[in-house]
Amino acid sequence: MERTERYIIAGSLVALAVLFAAVLYASQVKGIEVPDCITGVEPYKEGSLQKISDNHYQWFVVARMWNFEPAEITIPAGATVDIYLVSKDVVHGFQILGTNVNLMAVPGAIAYQRHVFNKKGTYDVLCHEYCGVGHQQMHTKIIVQ
Image 1 (cartoon, rainbow, N blue to C red):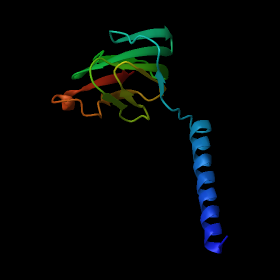
Image 2: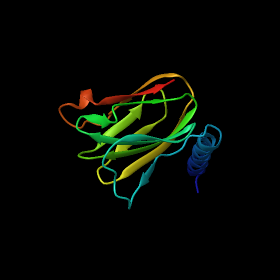
Image 3: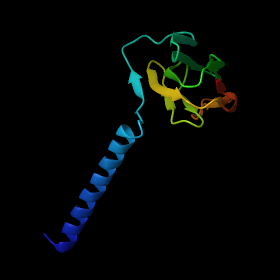
Image 4: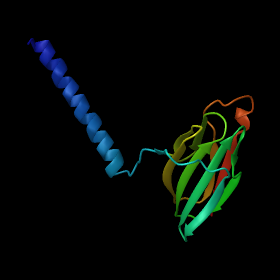
């Protein structure tokens, strides 16, 4: 094996180690989770916000041309929200600005992610996947009090 090949292999192994360390750091130290997709369950028909306990909510979001349902939710600061997302027609995006929540709504599947809203304010939610002529109007709000 030539010297150049050894350098390339060693560099590749170092790059893999750095990538693996970055993934561990993000998941263990920063608490960043990869969104899940729930399959084998019939998608729900209507959007709603359900209070599980004082600081725990389940938000069932329905994406359809060209809105999210429910149109707006209000939660207390520090609340943990389990977000469940379905699409009734085409593929939609779901991004909560100012957070790391970024989901894809795929017809027939339920996307899931958990987020804790520690800061008070209004969070805009946008569709980031072109879904047709009214795409630019597709948004909702989360009000954290």
